[in-house]
Amino acid sequence: MRAIVLLCLLEAAFADMIYHWDGPGRVAPDPNTGNACHTDPGSCGCCLMQQKIHRLKMYLNGTLNTLEKEYLEAKQSLHIIETSRTAFSVGLYSDDRAMCYGPYDFNSLIIYKQVFLNLGGNYNVETGIFTVPRSGVYILAVTIYSDAGAPGAKLAICTSLQVDGQVVVGTKDVNTYDQEDSATIVVALHLKAENQVAVNLPKGCFLCDDNSHYNTFSAFLLYATE
Ligand SMILES: *[C@@H]1O[C@H](CO)[C@@H](O)[C@H](O)[C@H]1NC(C)=O
Image (cartoon, rainbow, N blue to C red; front, side, top):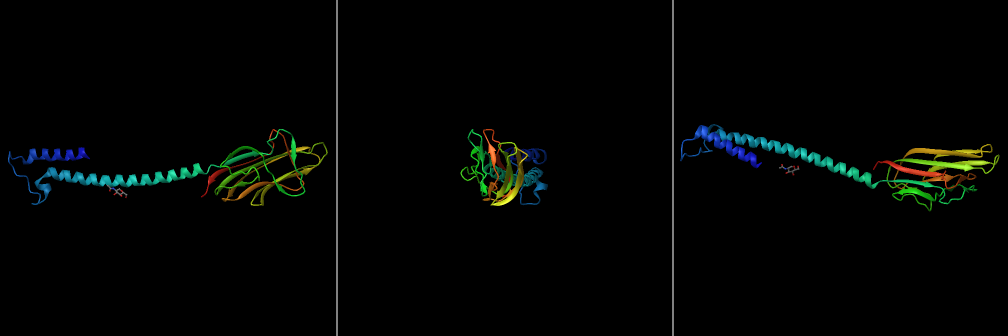
């Protein structure tokens, strides 16, 4: 800005020397008489330049305002992404011994005790329930394994993934010709904040595991929708 003002002054001075210099003691043109552009081309150029500078300033101010607004929006989105990090992965037992979970003569929620990851702390290791922290699209996965114990014994490997007590997807294999079996559920769901997600073990079914962690339950937020 200072440089431009100086340019203006220089231009005025230069124009003076060429067109209006009448020697020492000359009287400056009166800006009130007639058009200043005719009487003083130097200051006219300066005035035009100032108008252009003003327009440029307005343009730049507008652009800056737009950029600032977009920057704040992007920053806010990033903040939402950072504060909604949610992921957990749990296994059935934290014990080294081979054990089976069930069968029970009632439906029950599976309480996974081995926590591999519980980012956000939304999986409750006492209840087996994942409470959805914020609405969004989640990926959920359940892998199960069971062992009937002996050839010809009855295998009953089944579970269901539930949201607020309602079965969303299930897996089931009951027979006497497989001693061992496994199954996996993977699903993307649009869940709402406060939804309770858990894995149900239906009546009569049982899962077996050891320190290899064949039975896992995992979920993570793909993206938040609010
Ligand atoms: C630039 O824009 C802001 C926001 O509209 C306004 O408050 C400010 O006065 C403007 N500045 C200039 C120099 O026009």
